Length: 568
Image (tube, rainbow, N blue to C red; front, side, top):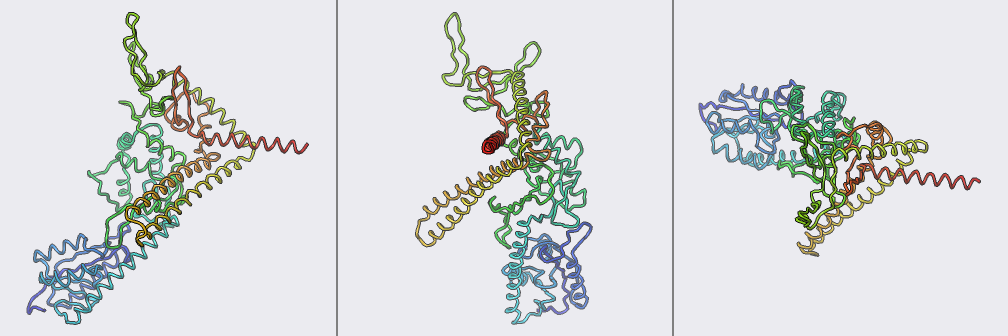
């Protein structure tokens, strides 16, 4: 009801969500075109209303209407409760909100209690002039707006999922090391400056540096962190993790880069979602539901180098005090009897420090005093396998040089036959094994769905359902782990005979080595086993591929000999 001779203090409320259209995301653009249009309409309306004075404006540009957790909406409500505003004007009901229950609560209950006049221009609604028909029509309009949000949400989710499956980049901000293609905003291209930093990070990790030390090194060099680099290039990127005026590199940011497969040319998207368009709680989806597409953009890091770093991150090696990196053999030496990591011990003698390796479970040699045994060590343990660091490194170096020569001879033999025949055969075998595991996953997913139907039809109990569901889930997880291992082996094979980063190329790189270093060890060596009497065993990282090459060449040799005999 209109109050005679009363001038209402009005606030205009403007809103536009990202899904509604022209959201202001481009640098230098202050607001969306729709926000400007809403302002103009409300201003013209107020100019014709002598009983309304426009005293404030509140705008939420880029916020959904499915809830009222909007910063400027909440500021407007604060102004209402303090008496600064007693009239709210919107272009239409959808700009106020698209939540049927929430909108009705404000318009039908809260605003009347606070004495607030509410006007929706395009919907011809004015609470001071409302009629009985408005009480019927208004809820229906709010319900239609709510349904519209639901339909838009479903379409947007479906469209985004289709883009993910096609390998299109749909995140708000490109990952550090890439930028958007100027001709195609859904495609990533390499940002050469940031890409060089990413390559350094991977190289330093392979050389033995920890994530905190890599971060410290970048900060010392004045290299902008990913957040600051985005801001320096005009991005509006913000993070909740910023704790200082200028965010620096941290161990977390380094690890995030080292574990991101995007640097191998693979897009992994759709890891998180929300239950529906109204509930904004973020949940993490199962890995099997992620959208993973390979070869969507240029790689910054070769897949072999990336896989190597993932293995290193699983280890727990530590760098020596006062040193940037770790000892060449750190985390790689094990007892040949019990399989446990050996202990590296340093001793001082004659003003010099010496290091040796020995199994922590090794039996202590018995000591004698006046012909009698005083101590025979622990009752159980391994035979001593103690060896000096210098002798161990010399033995490993000699073994590696021999193995490198042997593998390079094998490579030459492969070149004399059809090298790709080996690669294609092995990849076909692995593809077939992956297909089997995928069938296992599909079958167990069907079984999980089946037992749910059995539970719903009261054919099994809740306990039986939970037990069966857990069994099927374990089988799915095991199959996914096997697929991951097989896919990695396939990637290694594909990279073996081409490029500068394949595993055969790594052996070529170290053909004339004269000393050990950390990069050499982590690239070529899986483990070094120590045995009594100073015997060692060096296990190469690509032993399976090497064995396959040997078998392939033997089969080709036998086939050639058989063909020769048949030709006689």
